[in-house]
Image 1 (cartoon, rainbow, N blue to C red):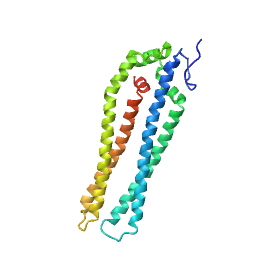
Image 2 (tube, rainbow, N blue to C red):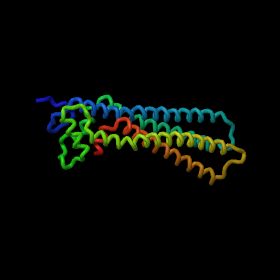
Image 3 (cartoon, one colour):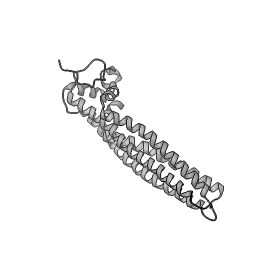
Image 4 (cartoon, rainbow, N blue to C red):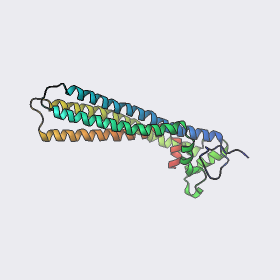
Length: 237
């Protein structure tokens, strides 16, 4: 009788599972969350950096003579500081949660792997999940051909999607910063923008900020799936 090599958090009947296969799956699960932790940490630094720069800009405005656009500049920098703090704090919570899964993956892996751990009837599993269950029970480290092909098929579109979303995020972030800087400069001119033009400019700027946030989520998700695709492929079937 072989000891159950599954993580301690996994319940239910224990198949005779390959320790090598389990190690590969647990490592992939940990890497999946580590990718988010690293990428999310970069987002946290960028968000808090935006907040710090905005607060610094507000401090400089206190020593500036009243002029066109000063009120708009104060509003813009205050909103940017608040957005940076909220985004950074929220992402920091997610980073800590994912870092915990990356450092201690056993419990999370046990929950994630339930669809192929023997707790779901074979008739409710896909061919890929059946191959995964057979792999864990085979005593071999070699990945099944069905699973390998499914991973290759996923990476064929997931990796380019990750590159595309990262490129889009870069351009959107640069464009957003340039747009707000342009609005601030135009608001301070002797002949500033009309109220309608300024309102439309703010609306476009806010829309770009939301697009940046969406692209951050898409980029992180696609990077996770591209760098650590095994467990995700098994879960998705």
